[in-house]
Structures are given as C-alpha cells and as structure tokens.
Length: 276
Image (cartoon, rainbow, N blue to C red; front, side, top):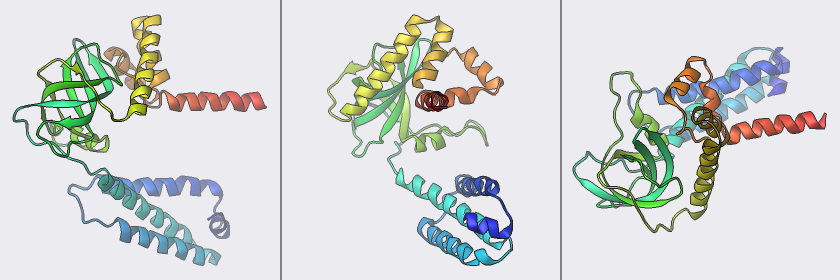
C-alpha cells in the first residue's frame, strides 16, 4: 500500500488517516440504517477483496484511482464487519413484562445510586425461558453482594427500554452489543446461590471489585470514587456531580479508557522513558 501511495505522490500519513476513517464510515452506515438490511457481509467482503487487488494492480498508474479503490474497499469492509458482529451477537430478547421470574446467575457489574443499585447479571437460568440471554440488568435494593457473587432472586423482566423520544438515547441498541437481553426490577432480595459457570471470570470480577472497595475506603468519598474508576474501571462510586463536571470539561473519556487501558499507557510510557 505504501508503494501505491508513493507512485501517486502521496505520503504515508494520509493512508493512516484515510483508511481507518473509511472503515469506520462503512460501519457507521450500517449502524445508522433504520431497518435491518439483507445480510451482505460475505459478498461485500468479496467485493472489498476484489477492489483491494485492483488497487494493487493499478498501483503503477500515477493517478488517484488506486487510493480511491483502497478507501472504498476499506469502507465496504467496515460495513461487512459491523454486520457480521451484529449477527454474531444473536441472543434472546425477553418478551414484555408479565410476571416475576426466578433468576440465577452471578453479578458481573454493580452500579449504585442512593439506596438502589443496578446489577448486571450473567445469567445461568431464568424460570420459564429455555434459551436465556447472556446478561440481564436488574434494579434492586442495595445489598451486600458484589461482582463475582452467585445469586438468585425474583424479578419482573422485559426487553430493554426503547428511546424516550425520537432520536434519543437507545438503551436497547447499546444493550444488544453488551449482550443484555432484558431489564427489570427485583421483587425479592438477592440470596446466595450455587453457580458452576465462569469460575475464572467470577474470581477476576471479585478481585477487581475488592481493589475498588479498598481504594474507596482509604480515600475521601469523592476522590476515592474517581481513583477507583481510573484504576479498575469501576465507576459506581463516582459522585454524579463529579461525573457531570468531567463530561462538561470534555474529560469524560478519561473514565471511559480507565483501568487496563490507562495502566497499559502509563506502563508503556514509563518503560519507554526508562529505556532512553
């Protein structure tokens, strides 16, 4: 590809900018479609491959045509990748709320707000559902259980909520890609359960939660919540006013890339500077 750009008089930087943007644009086109289109991932990947080969063949010409073909190939590949990912996540979406059901699984994430908390539960079984979704989100009274704990409770469940207004935040859209196939509220307090699934993930979630709890216990409430989020990615302890202030200052992405990403970045910079 560098040879193509050298032949038409382009440097390496435009390639590094144009191709990822083209890939993302193709994915965005798919994700913003109002209805699900006919599945085209395989033929579109074949088309992208043909365009890529054509760009290599035409690299000797001193025109912008090879670059245009490359950009188009990456855009088509982005569309196909987004479509493939969407269908690869195919899972059950719970029907409308009708009655309380017994849910058994383990807590993957906890988001606390006042006396209530939202639990993301990795599902083992749901009463009356033969093929339960991978995860559900349940609002419950604050309890003593945390990530990694296996629980059972009764909850009224339904599909993820639709946007409150046209063009508003679509919780169902985000839930699909998070593997969350239902949401609702608990009508009983969680109780301890025996779950054999995901033993390794459960231990890691519990370890991560214990680190966040230790950080929050050793620091003032507001700064401890931010510190725990930066170290472990657990944002449940951040004061709502602090979260809004970070977003207003354009620093909300700091929390979004917290935990492992920040550790990798800081560690990489440290070792790079040490090696100089």
